[in-house]
Image (cartoon, rainbow, N blue to C red; front, side):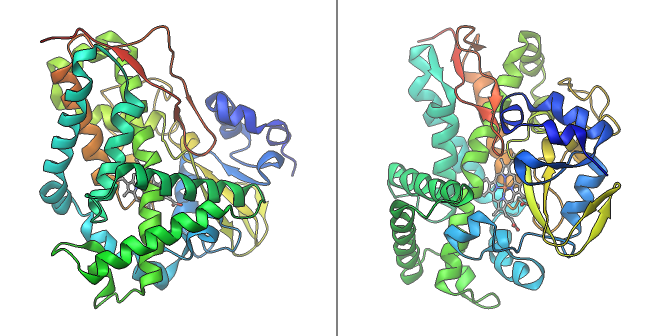
Length: 390
Ligand code: HEM
């Protein structure tokens, strides 16, 4: 079988304007070999779901997985029982009841504080002035590092991300990544030595999980890796979607009950984590494609989320969909996003408070904000204006 469309696809296309190309692939080559990615790309909703759910056949546990090369084995890079052991202690801290009780007041206060800071100006870049600092503060709070300097946490994070990018590009691990990781390790050890009553990290060290310190550090790094860029991007995409049509913003002002729907629809249209990687553990066939043991299989969540077989008028932002629970922005199967309730809380809180606090909020027409990116998709900046009040 040949894949004439897949043959032609470039990384640039997928980074800049991916949706038309994903639509073409989905229609005729729903599992296609892409030389540009050295892997298979899965763009149909049913097949994407199947690959993410069948973790024995499509594993994350492979030495090529770049994040694991930087942070060590963690929930993100293990399957089966080892995965449950690593994920278990953190999962309980992010359950809906915990999110409502422990995080909601923190998120509300943080969003209010960040908006208060920009409010007098009448103009702002919401990615760096709101979405970014919020996502960092929430992760720091969840890790018990709320008192740490957010700038320092951002530096660690940036160094770890740079490390993952270097490894993905076949380069050696930069020194900064190693030293950031060492500093994170020190902070985690300090927390474990003298934990707060609700310390998630300390709970992971205790029965029934009994993770070793190095394992806790790896999972803490994965929480940072999984929860900062993604959340920042989710909020940036949401603000752009909500403001693109002034009528849409008016609808949300009149009926704030639609805010959760707007959040899901935005996640469907532009899932910030556009792809997830798996490795085939055996030869297999998927929609006519012959996948060999060891092949990289990339699930296009962005492709699956616009599958017309599931979502009518898939390229339209609509607030009247009744099947949004089928959108896959937070993945599915054993690795479904651990932070999804916390992420949703942040997105809803931001939208609620923006609607309340900034009258006449609109996108700055001089600075368009298209989403871009191969793995993490978001606008580089979200410049907005509003009518400043006293
Ligand atoms: C508070 C914010 C967040 C936290 C703490 C968080 C944390 C995590 C963690 C720890 C995992 C790995 C779970 C495992 O392997 O068992 C994960 C998976 C995932 N997260 Fe999140 N996340 C957050 C926000 C988001 C957002 C906003 C998105 C996208 C819009 C997202 C998309 C995903 C996806 C697609 C996966 C699956 C990865 C895979 O299967 O390979 N996450 N998340």
